[in-house]
Image (cartoon, rainbow, N blue to C red; front, side):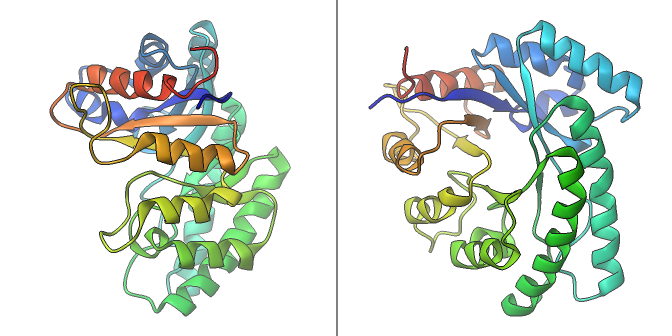
Length: 265
């Protein structure tokens, strides 16, 4: 089973190296190229400066490495389904700057979190729908997408997340299915299948590998078949979160695994 798609790397894969001061964000396009990828997914907390000159430098370095900057993963910007309207409004405004930055870098999407805190699911969906509808309206000026990953909380429950997609119902709002990040009582394969019709990107989560290079927690052949059956042929992003391999080696192992399913390899 081989199909056409490209491989990207989520910068979160190198988080320990970044936090230890071993690399900077500016090094990540090179690391992505050396891993065998052609795309990069940035993390908002890794930006040393959002100033225009820095963004232009980062964009130039990525281009020189043959790497396309695809999206920005945005954390820590507030709850989009908070009960308090002012809190939700501030969360929307907090995300505006990342859409501005994504536009400068040539991204196609920003990834947001749905929210946090104990809020009844029905109320949370309505609040989130209002927030994301407004944020998507702001994103439309740049032809950018807004996506939600199954990133814990209510977003990790596929029925709730699909319900939110249908409630917002705009073409630049979608999902970022992650092969992991689901509670134990959720069928990962069914959940990804439910999310794929709305997918703006895909995250191939990797932790550990067997002697044959297979990811031991996820059947990648089964997952990639779900991805392809949905008609998706965009970038599939490596996100390495294991601890047995170093982050450089772990990313390369996941890229190697994905290449088994990639036409031309």
